[in-house]
Each structure stands twice: as structure tokens, then as C-alpha cells.
Amino acid sequence: MRTGPSWFNITSIVLGFAFLYLPILILVIFSFNESRLVTVWAGFSTKWYGELLNNQQLLQSAFVSLRVAFLSATAATVLGTMAALVLVRLGRFRGRTLFSGMIYAPLVMPEIILALSFLLLFVAIDQPRGFWTIVLSHTTFAMCFVAVVVQSRLVGFDRSLEEAALDLGCPPARTFFVITLPLILPGVVAGWMLAFTLSLDDLVISSFTTGPGATTLPMMIYSQVRLGVTPEINAACTILVGIVTVAVIVTSVVTRRSELRRERDERRAVAATG
Image (tube, rainbow, N blue to C red; front, side):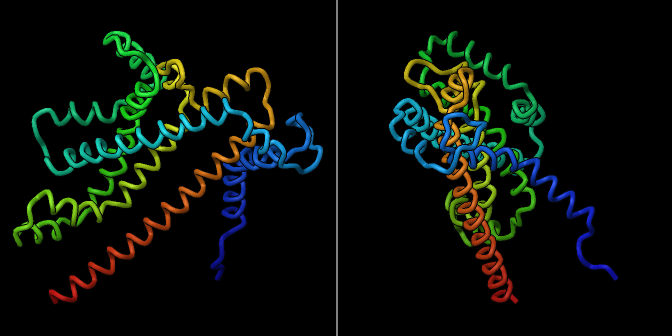
């Protein structure tokens, strides 16, 4: 009896990974191209990474993107987690349908509409556009994704540990930070990573809500690509790919260890009560 994967499954996996990662692999390879022409391979070289270190505009825009992504992802994680707790823990309440609809609407709304809405809002309240308007707009659309991820974690959450802590006199706030948050931490971390990546990648909303001195890396790359792709851009994108890859690996390791610790604690609790 055949037990290994079939040729159809292997072919599907290979084609799927090639479709996903072959363009990124080509970008990484041509970031080490000796030639200035990005489509002509002229030998291996790391000189464009050295040139990138001297390109203050690209470095400044990359720093702006990382600050925006970190701040907006953190704020979106806090707000998204609170929204998920409301949706899961409060059950059916007056206005729940409207509340959940407003949480999920930005997920399916075209990004250009969100960007124009943010622009009109900041103009209406006479808010000068710049770094913080980008952070606010990114927080708003990213918190919806965080809410969905954390909500899926909360739905399968065993509340018996929470109830035991409350029965023993632990205050609700302490119960949340000592019991609930560590147990849903993998979902919270995954939501933060998703929000960070979405913010780092965003171009449309950033273009509508930015101001002087707040040019993000996607905006800088897009403005330069219209004049032609340079190897420096390939080098900058390769560094970003490396940062995201390391972050994903670290998150996976932390999440896995958290899951193992939770399973071990649950087994000990069952053994102690049994």
C-alpha cells in the first residue's frame, strides 16, 4: 500500500512554492548583481549594499517605515485584542451586529476608499498630515485583522482556568494578565506580526495620509521605480525580506514554546486535581 505523497501532491507543492517565492528569490539574486542593469547578470557583488548605506533617503524612509509599523502594530494589537474580547466574552448584546460589522468592514473595503476617508477626516479636523497621521490610519485598518486573529484564539479557549482563578479570589484584571493573556499569547503575537507586515507593506493609505518629512519606504521605492529599478532598491528589499523572515522564525519559535508550556501546565493541573 502506497504511504508516501503522490506525484500530484509533490508537483502541486513545488508549483505553489515556486509561484510564491520565485519572484522574491530573483529579487534577492539580482541584489548581488555587479551590473547597474537589474536584468543583466554581470557577476556577484555586494557593492550595492555599500551604496545603500550611503543613500540617506532610502535609509531615512526605511527608518520611518519601521517606526510606523512598530507603533501602529502595537496600538492595533491592544485595540484589536479588546475588540475580540468584547465580541467573544460579552455574548449577545444590543448593537453587537453593528459593532461586529464595523470591526469587519475594513477587511473587505477597498484600500483606496479607506485612504480617501482618512484624508477627508484629517482635512476636516484640520490635522496636519505627517508621521502620526500615518500611524493612526495604519492602526485603524490593522486592528481589524488583529481582532479576527485573536478572536479565533479566544473561541477555542478553555475558560475553566479563568473560572478557577476567579473562584480563588483573583481579581478580574489580574486573572486576565496572569491566566488569559499567556494562554492567548500565540494569537496576540500572530496578530502583531500581521499588523506589522501590513503596515510595512502599505503604500496607498500612506500616500494619502503622509506629509512633509514622513516618506515611507514603499513610497520611496515606488517613486524611484517609475524612473527605473536600481540595484540599491533590490538590496533594500532584500534586507526587509531578511528582517521579516527572522521575525517570522522568532515568532514561530516563541509561539511553539508557549504552546508546549501551556500543554505542560495543563497536564500538571489535571494530574494535581486527579
